[in-house]
Image 1 (cartoon, rainbow over the protein chains, first blue to last red):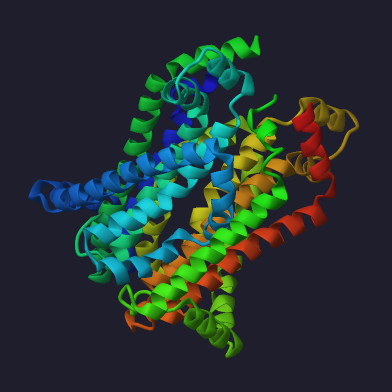
Image 2 (spheres, chains in turn yellow, red):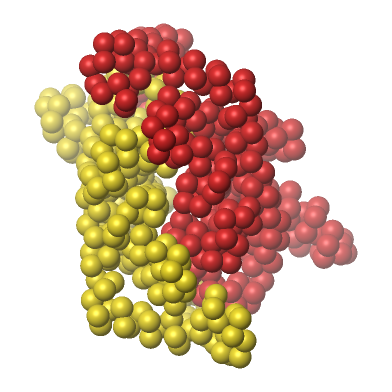
Length: 259
Length: 270
């Protein structure tokens, strides 16, 4: 596995070769150029979009919707998940509803959201919250349930209040599950924001990409896609960085368990 | 490991839990019906549940919804099977050979963070609103879970198995078919299972963005024409479809990999 930490020359060479092939083919065949413009042209389109500020507006709109929806979903789903995981009887009431709604592809909620909220920002945020809530909720419930009984019993024996049991035993105990849910929710939130923007948007990266396709500006379209991919990558990286920072204590615990 | 929930299992048995769940759903349904009948909320948005169910029965009997579902599932199946046919073998090769893995690693890592719906405009550019557009989108988005899980499976293979097969002088093809494929099938199945809901989501999205038929188109179109009961009926059909797909997958898994369940159990116990 140390080989994976080395710089992967071979992989970057493959990428370079593909891009070079792309550039040459696209430059020499005009029919192809219409659909796949040369890489250099896409990159310069991306640069121009940045310089003119045209793309910054779409990017900030998408990012704001994403953050609003995702954070709202995280807050709701984690608290709801802890409650449902802790109070088993409450969960038994809601379980069937959850199992009924879960298999339905979350994007199907978009038409209902349009009907209720119109085609503004709030609709896009609402569907993002709905869709990214599921993995967080389910994982949190699972996490709370997998806490060892001795931990909670010990807490109770020492006469800890409900609040302290929640903060000092349940939350840390379920945190690895919660983090998994949050990570899955992150990519789902980005999917939902871009999808909703394609279907109803008048701004945002999803709208921008589809709009450029419709006006046959394939260079701008690819530039937009690169930007979304970078955004997705950066969000993921940021999440991982936060996770390693927040969950530092856990690596010690896992190591202790293994030995 | 005993979790603290095992104890409380006593007072809330599995059966009473089902009853509670059913009661709650029934309560919600009655509430919905009452709100709809009394027109408490804009009846355009919340029609009575009985009306939705009647419309659901109508569009199901008339063949409207079944036809849309068939149209959607045809595209979904082609994209999904294509993704499996390409990315399971690729995953096996990438898992077996470190140099093939390194050759493709960067390209894959570049493509993976692209959110699948963003691929729809590209597919539309090439294929218009044809079936190929949706097939390509589904193919692209199902690729990653299948590929990454297969690579993982091959990498975690017990090397004694491989070496034994080599010692007995099995050919490469036979090793792949008779040793690697069965040994990795749990992970491959996991990849296929993860990409099943992704397939359904993407077929719905791509039909909403650019299509003239399919269940995704049906739902969005019903909303645009303010045929709200039809819209809810379509969503109900979609929920049933999602559930059914999962059940079919389980059934196939049990039929094709009957030994798999036992192995998983042994692993969990061990």
